[in-house]
Image (cartoon, rainbow, N blue to C red; front, side, top):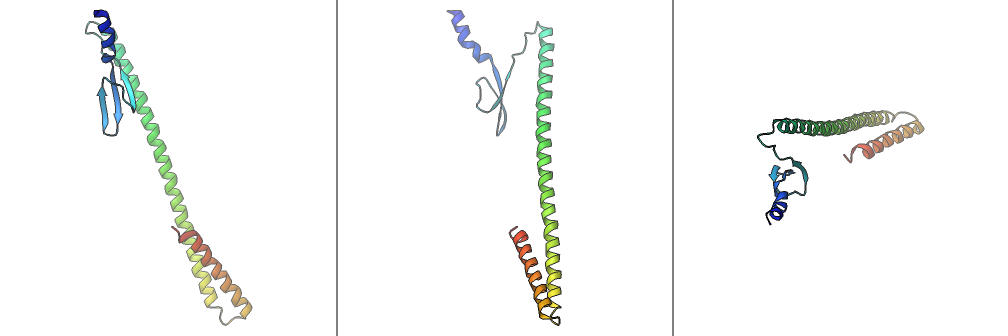
Length: 139
């Protein structure tokens, strides 16, 4: 009878380290999220076991720190890529805006030219404006 009670009580000896939205929680019940089962501390009369456990914990901590470092590095890489994309788009829109302005100035100053040349400059200015609007006004 005593043996059967020990078997039933044995799972309650496990300790779980659970990561939740609110932080880290320690429990004797497995959690649904990210969890790590922590080994029980060795008996006080087992110094070799205590050293092994300390080494295991150091290795576990180093592994978790490396994983977190990699995740942070990946986030920084993605953010840098996004920033470069935004900067390139801003630069492109600035360039298109200048081309639009210059073409409009050319078309406006062409009133005294032959009408065919004037129409070509106006068409060119209109196309620059359309390109600018298509690429930059929706941002």
